[in-house]
Length: 198
Image (tube, rainbow, N blue to C red; front, side, top):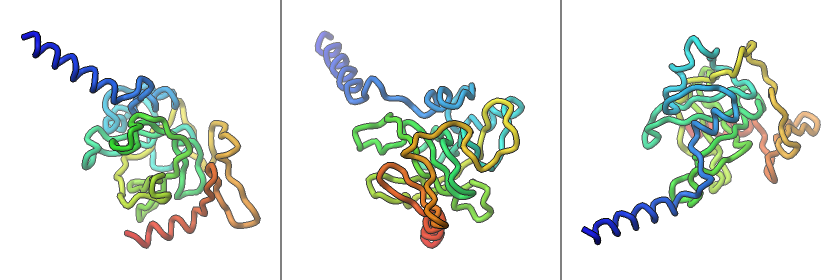
């Protein structure tokens, strides 16, 4: 009996040591960052917001993008729009997106490019930037739409909260480059490349 108890304690210690104390899941992070007070798994936020918060399919700074349950994402995912770059690209802040094998599961990532690849430009299908590949991932994710914080006005193409200087839109002439850290993106080119891969 004593051996069994010691083994259980060892398993618990090893399991908790693998997850850093600062690790967050996407739901509490999105709740804190957006001020949207909804409960349940991430995929439940879309229906939970009905009659409580405005919802829609147009990005707006501070809104929460709700990912549907799919594949290994059995609880869905939520991310907070940090900046609207174009009608087809946003930068999001979110937690717990990194691959499980990356060793930093639960990490908060900021200014992550998300690209709308839906045919109707309704944000129902997106690609998410994958840092290890330095490109948008190959996977297309289904989303349910945006939940807007507070008494949201009609969504507009502008960030509703300040964005750090290294995440701001830089426009040299008509190039429309977006600088994120040390990387520059051209939204139209990214959209064309993602569409070509579908």
